Image 1: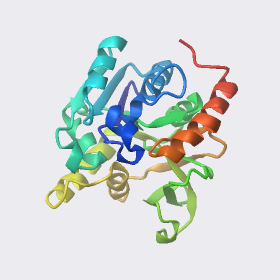
Image 2 (image 1 turned 90 degrees about the vertical axis):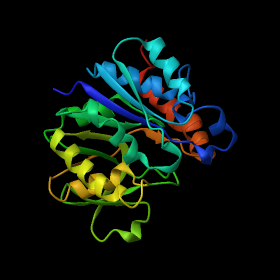
Image 3 (image 1 turned 180 degrees about the vertical axis):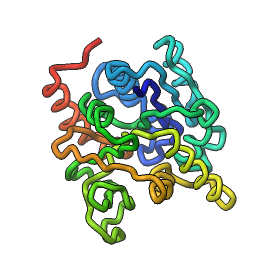
Image 4 (image 1 turned 180 degrees about the horizontal axis):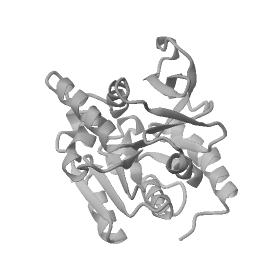
Length: 249
């Protein structure tokens, strides 16, 4: 049973312009709480008792959040957040993840509870959650051979095979897969720290099968820019609340 999650929360939110200089993306509010806090509530509801947050930009917000939410929240700081990609943040947490399977989440997400249950209940040990068409304007497409991960890209034309869906930003990672991601990252870091976790996942997936789990009508949104924020606030979040009859305390 998985009891650990890692939330990648080091990004600077530059595409959110002034808002991104004031708060980390995870502290955007669509309801009463920051979206990262809602993710933590959902994780705890799903049985996740240990949550590791990798911080960078405006780290003090997460320090205060961890103090307020109490036990089970751990923080790791990526001091090179401004010059590295998300895989460097995941790499920074390696000493806390020895032989642990975990859920991997991005901090700038809002999503239904069933996104977590679908991944946790799937038979595979390594699972990449995919959705149907989101029309978000910043899609990351997932190429699969059957249901096995082959590649990801924001440019659909760059993918040579069948596109199974869009990357959501929630992944179930086994300890062996994580070791493969670390090995791929260490080789890449010799030349550049700018490596996104999903590309390390694809590289590690060459040696270990990663299942692509499609939940076609999933309600979710990533918030990277003003357009995505408006879409999440005006459409996605109200529909999540309506579908789930509100967030439990």
